[in-house]
Length: 452
Ligand code: PHE
Image 1 (cartoon, helix red, strand yellow):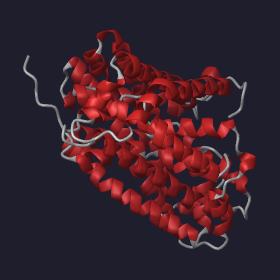
Image 2 (cartoon, rainbow, N blue to C red):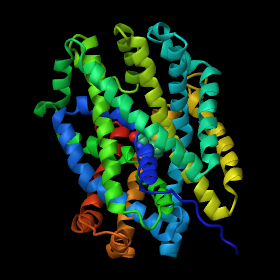
Image 3 (cartoon, protein in one colour):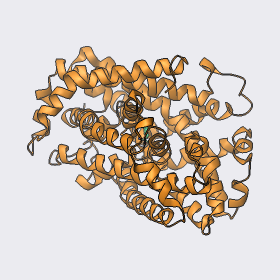
Image 4 (cartoon, protein in one colour):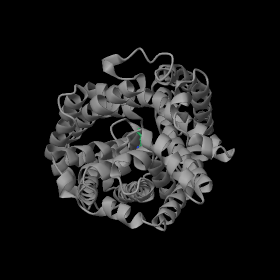
């Protein structure tokens, strides 16, 4: 059989920005700030940081190295390394297939707010009931997610270098500038210093084992681990790019954006509510209900709000691109369907599967699997069940089947492996235990036995 040459990222910067594009998403901009505010401020930040350089580092190195070593996406990669364990590749591949549709529904909501702000409707967007009326509308959210999926598909259609890499190289720097810029602006609001202190000062009253579990779960999601993405992106990485330093850069980028997102959101919400912190814990409502009100109360609110939603849109898009790219690459590797055809099939499939997640807030709100909305249900299955399982299996596979040396060898192709010892101990012993804790606690949490 004739094999076409595999697509590649053109260089290290292209790889790092594309991977960071996947990692930086709604998780950084919306979930991280409220988790940090809820679980003890500075102490949460510290725990998160420690986990990022140990746990996150280990899993990301493992996945990227598997991808680059085999030059294949998840299913093919596990198959090539040991046929008996191909099922891990299948399990990993299910995750982006589940996530992409509902992620696109949320991406569609972001498009709606972007349109509201750009068309001068920022006051309307801040009205009570605006968000609820929109998500329960039978057609509007569908049009919005359709547009979001279309944009994602066009970029994936263009290919790795001309689509994914090029878009990441433009969007990621803009995203970084916007995040820091808005954070600086909110720091100048009168009274914001108290909010800032609330965000960064360790609050030991809010610290418990839950802080660690929440930080771990967040880290895992935020770095786009255990869903084949980093394996796929690793398979597009040239052999002369250094894996360890790339991972360090991706982690720094991802963590800094999350930190600055907190700096722009927590103090602003704090000022708006006259120092009452409870609004920050508003969960999903924070971004679409509370923040538009906060913007509406600011002097330059309509401009800042517009910039904010552009930022969120970019972050969501680079993440959805990585999800779609991963699925396309799996189909391409496994079924030998061309990129363009595969992209079209996946886009149509995603639109269909996104329907229940969208309608679950409107005409289908009566159907609640496990007592959750469709969107929450899909989120639960992928993030709380499948991802920890895939990550545990991946650690086991690396630690005891192909052995950590196989990964170290790939990392050391062109540089030293400075944190090799840490990598080995984490993969074999510590990460699996941490992952088991995430899995058990999120199941207990979903069943309502423990509240995290
Ligand atoms: N890492 C992304 C974030 O922080 C979320 C994501 C998950 C993106 C899965 C792609 C795939 O929001």
